[in-house]
Length: 271
Image 1 (spheres, rainbow, N blue to C red):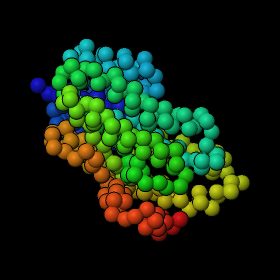
Image 2 (cartoon, rainbow, N blue to C red; image 1 turned 30 degrees about the horizontal axis):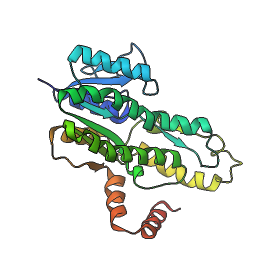
Image 3 (tube, helix red, strand yellow; image 1 turned 120 degrees about the vertical axis):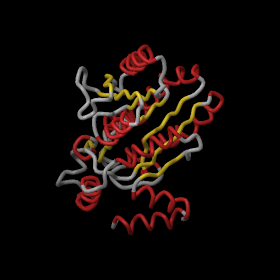
């Protein structure tokens, strides 16, 4: 019997590729989308389900509909997320809340709704799509960094809570891949990128570095491969770095003391 998988944020980028690859591998895949009654692009074998992670009623309805149809959810991939480009000085209350509402609170809402079904089934797998920026900081991405640090903390703690029920929890610490993240996954604070901003020099230097790394980056196929590997390998690592930045900086972060690591980050990004 094929495993039933729910992937949030499955309309583009990593979520879309992962949904397609798992469906091709024989999984029963449900892809979360915020657009009602619209099929997922190029994912004919993936069943779309309306799922807005910022709305508890939408989350509850989506999970209930899958369980009613399939009887269970074996795997949850928490993929939905976006990034805010803003300095701490400029970030508004709404921008701060919205960033956490999707990346952190949304993840918690979906996980909260799925857990009782996994617990009663006696097992399951939860995979949180995180980032190498959940282990290190970069300028202008503080809010996004903080949200991914939170995802790492959730993964750490949730593993202990779910241990008695045979539910595995993992994090994929993604690097930068060629996705629609720049077009669809970034929100930009107008004051931060203003010509009058005191951070103008930092913005003009750093934003193109990130944008180019994403626009010209590799395909996100390795993320899909990592998700499948975690699902099928009960001894999979807890935290799985995927992509150049993740595979470079996460081991470096472990090896160096704080000041030495910060120095290497400054040198790498010309900060």
